[in-house]
Length: 414
Image (cartoon, rainbow, N blue to C red; front, side):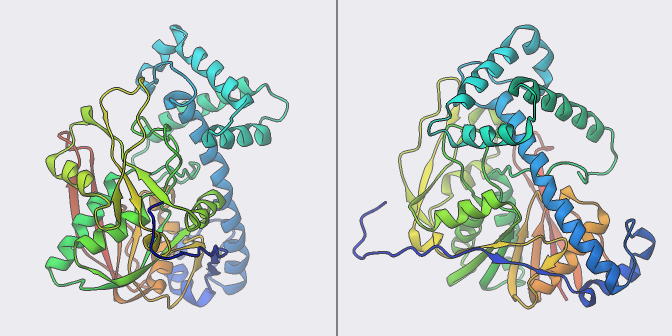
């Protein structure tokens, strides 16, 4: 931590909790979508209370499958426990025949037997101990690899995007925050957003190793709440000290946020130079953090990772302190009259079907002040009973291959 001219006392508060959505808050949605109600739900208060309570438990249960998916991705892409090459899904058959998969698995099992200070190995060790029952750990991991491969094939055959039966993963990445900043800049330019005093982030994620562009050579971290604060200040939209509530259902994410408030927090910003980012994306990466902290020496990537450029930013304690973690399931819980100016939700509502997305939109509307905005990279169903309207959208291309992009939809509370 930087030397300070005063003593900073960090007080860790328990996470806030969301309130179950009252029937009055969803009655219009249930009646308008009566033909699409899931089994066991009717448009009456008693049915809503019973169904929403069970649905909350079911959604939270999907975190377990998301953790198992993260375990598989650590096996394929992790570099903190092995010197074996990473395995792209497209080359898995070849790497299995060559023995690379077996070697990575053996290295992972050795790491799990003695995780040391490797927090990701400690997390996976806990997952394996809790879930493998009477199976050998290696068999359990490989069976989950096969499950992930089968699931990928199922999802590829679908025409709709919703991952409604997938585990809820905690993975995160930097680039969606570039799209959010671009959308915020456009809102400001059109005079639709002037000052943000209260903001919220739904499902900020926790950097594990959940994709080929994710890495595990640095401690787990969250990015989006800091990225939002950074963007608000850069664009001149942030109040002197904006508050940011961070909603999540994962105990690991909430614990991470609480602990972040009690120590210096540094984010690592690796970039694969072979990914052909656009000049605008590179400029965002280079500027990230200049409003919220100080650039420091980054952690050096292992030799196994070639072509990785790195930056690191130590975030100021006063910025970390504005984050307020809240245990809340946006599908069936809300904080009415929170009066947020802006709510951000990227790569999270895709995990839910159209009915759940309508419930989420209704709950978010209840948390926004009139005229406030939800910015999300998922197009949501428009229901007349929900006091929201689609104003516009922003598409941002990240790389020279246009398919690597995001479209951010602007929903405004009426």
